[in-house]
Length: 236
Image (cartoon, helix red, strand yellow):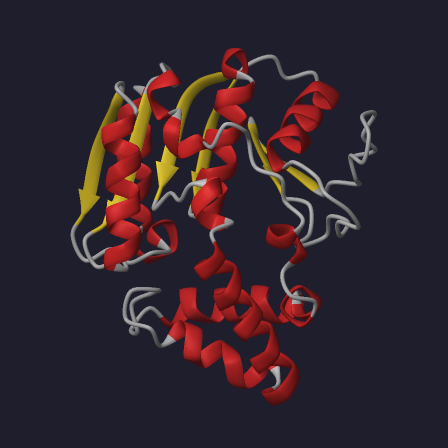
């Protein structure tokens, strides 16, 4: 997709039935950022380019932070908001998290990505150890985005989140919202996800037993059931 607004990059898009799946700027097959940009504005530009006036927005982890920014900036585009293990953009840009990514980039340069990936996947809250198919899928995605690790994660470092910060504006979201998380996620992320759930007045929360951070890969049946029930769609 060739964007029409300033700095809007080429975005890789896949259409699956009526679903739109895209790679955010800086990862996958989308172009890499070269200067400050907004993930929320990218999504807005993409939907305008595709002629989509309103959509159910489903997002995981940092994707949830992007979806929240987008909803704050363009509420008329969002029919239902589904946030799985969601973060917040101002938290994603917090100094501690930026330093953590910098350390990960340094480790990748010194030890190689092949050595770093197991350190990520073996954290007990990331993905269930027995879920070998999901672990291999995540490993493949990381390997295909080697440059993202080596270059210090510019999709975060150059990202300009919504202002004022999203964490102080959650009550502005009146879109029907579903929060999904696993009970085995990182305690810090559980606290953050629960903060989002408390802050959005319209939100309801579903906690999936045994679910880790990559909840859609770890518990796909339970995840899909929660989403479809929220949207009022039969899962049969």
